[in-house]
Image 1 (tube, rainbow, N blue to C red):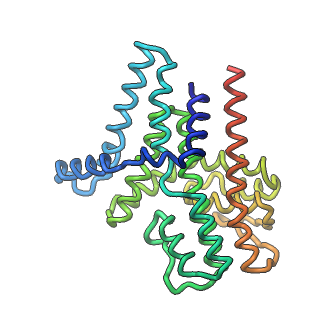
Image 2 (tube, helix red, strand yellow):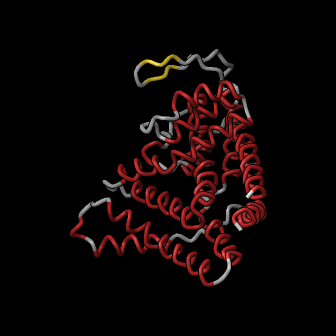
Length: 302
């Protein structure tokens, strides 16, 4: 049922786009505010974040157990599809990439910055309104879109394949809570950032290997090997680095302590950095096809 559920969800996403009709998150934020009010004695305890995510996940897990024990595994498809659609990322990823590249080609930096600000989940990393450096904007766009492409689909699929509907839901609720804490400048945002980095660690490393297989293997693996064990490296930083290698950006890496220093050849800018942004969606599409093929093969073998 896992593979069938995944295929159906991917087909539905192609039809109506990322499960937007199911993306209603107010119930979760209402529950978070209620939990926060009833636990004032806990102050800014990060344990409240765990409880807020765990309660709905345990509820879904209970449904999975009941369906498995008292009915048939086939009934899980009725749960997997809506939960997986809900767990996919918010926003129009393809439309935003198109809007940014269109603004870059026309030289409209205000529109380009607006698109990046909407897609950037971290308020502290959003662009300044007077930034007209297109090389910096394109590199920022690559970072923002690479992470959003990962969190909206690949991390969700990874945890769905590993832990079923509860795993996918747990990841999405963690991201929603993290973004909310950043927006309101809650002290627990730093803890959630570290926790989310650990949660995303295996999925990001697997996606990096996938890019190596569908892109430039040697350049990608050099970057992957130098960064894959670092738990301090934030997910967007790791993803951008390995994606650049997969797209053929060569780097002469020399490891000194905990730092890696890349030295790249000169490129014609800003055309080259914009080309990277335009090529990025194709790398995601190739990796997705690879994942679907791998899941289908494993399903047939077991």
